[in-house]
Amino acid sequence: MHENYSFAVLTMSDKGARGEREDTSGPYLQKRLAEEGYILQSYRVIPDNKQVIIDSLIELVDDQKISLIVTTGGTGVSPSDITPEAMVSVIEREIPGMAEAMRSASLLKTSRAMLSRGKVGIRKESLIINLPGSLKAVKENLEVVLPVIPHALEKIGGGESDCGVV
Image 1: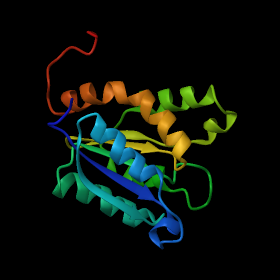
Image 2: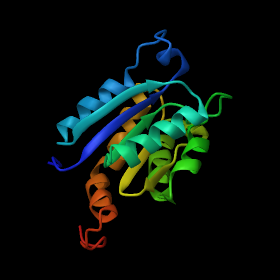
Image 3: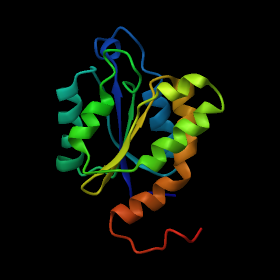
Image 4: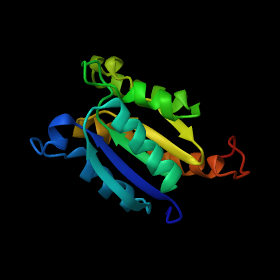
């Protein structure tokens, strides 16, 4: 259990922010991460607007000091999909292996996974993970990275355990 780590869920959806579409991915993430012992601190549905995404992520990290932020939506190739571009403005260090692992696992299920542009990165002592918007993809991608999140958070926070020891 990971009761020492707080988390936030940030859903990027123009229609969801306007109340025109029910967010299913965000509530799933809240439930699944709480099952793992993480403590929910924030949940928001915001529009696909680069500055709103940047401001939200910075506030969750810098002001609220949330350990784990999981986003859903805005990672594809539609004109409104700008989550990766916002991430570039927010993160200090990228963790490409986590994003690559999610895409690799998804490619076993659909060739469209290669269109996913989600990133994973670090800002201060927070881990930010971009997931796709669909509930099916969120479930599949989260399960890929879930086993390494505790170790990543420990290391980001200055933990000295060895990465090579499982």
